[in-house]
Length: 278
Image (cartoon, rainbow, N blue to C red; front, side, top):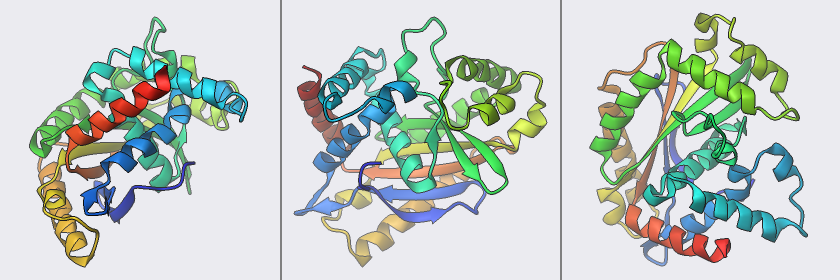
């Protein structure tokens, strides 16, 4: 994995739902939007390539593969809304903070007739102490945290019904690479004849919400005062999140990423991606 850039200031996975508050920090008096944009690009090959393609990544092929990955992002219908930025951030955070392993690369199969798991923004697995967990992620790359909470709550209701999950499982089944480390365990979990009562105990939904933060805007360095203020802000938004109707039968982890501002990050990412795609 790339060296960490985002740091978890708050991490309480034992809560229901769990909470992780991560931060990009500051440098020379400014929020690190440039460094964060570069960090997102470091994750691009693993995010955009499937297992077999990623396994062929070498010093000789790196430039070409990286360009192909960048071009794949540009060709995505989501790119006009910068949807992939949020998906890569979620991918990076759950890989770094929770040790997840990607199950499939959604964007690698974007041109397939049955576009892979349209409703979920990440499909990973985590080796838990009692067996394999399937992590199905949701992202809202927003400026406004209130809108992000409202909209993700509505999606969680839609995406956690049994018919919806059955259709998503069928899509994952078709796209799972034959060389995947946990292929057999995943196929057993996704099997159509498996009881959803059992499957629900093996699902975790990491929910990444970004927002323009008043606390980040009011500070210019990471110190005790900043960490106390951003922790208080995380708690405020966590209580807002648990105040909406959430699926009670599923494990959910709320991940908060404050920004100053979303627009700066996206502009910087766009400029860097253009340089890679040509």
